Amino acid sequence: MDMAVDKTPTELAREFMLGEVMAAAMRQLRALDKPWLRLPEDKQREVIDEVRDAVAVAIRQAVEIIATDDRTRFTAQVESVTFKDGVKAVLTMANTMASHELADVQGGRVYVVIEDPNRYIHSSAAVPKADPDQPALEG
Image 1: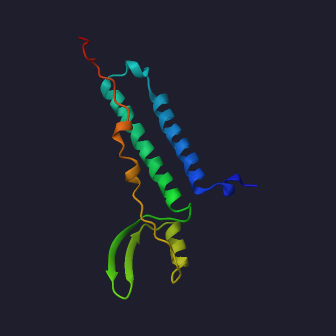
Image 2 (image 1 turned 135 degrees about the horizontal axis):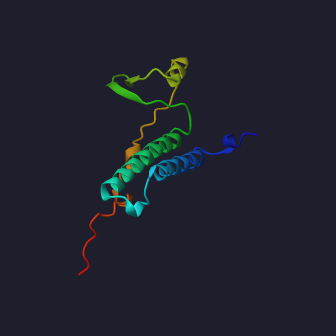
Image 3 (image 1 turned 90 degrees about the vertical axis):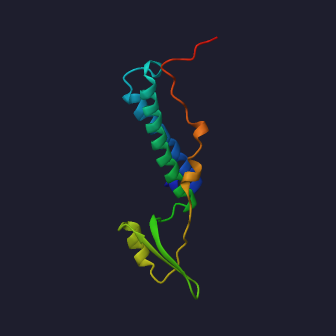
């Protein structure tokens, strides 16, 4: 029996995000040629930036899984929205497997989910800072 079938989208996203965050951190740890405390401040900043970028991608993907209940999904550009006898929206998207599934349901119903994963990423207070090359003098 496939255990993934029994998991909720939130559980799938949690496992996915944990794996992606761990992988991002491990990539950086493996790439270091010196212990963290021996790295210059600019190299520490570079490592922090790379880990933050990888974690941001994982968060966006996890939010997408949760917001769409792990259904078929695609990213589209909203070309226009017209209010007349209801609402008509024109979306432009890349040609992917999801676009073919969309074509298969033409005339049918779909759900449109509007979500901004960036609202979960902008917590700069939680991002570690690099250690200064010149520590402050104790006085």
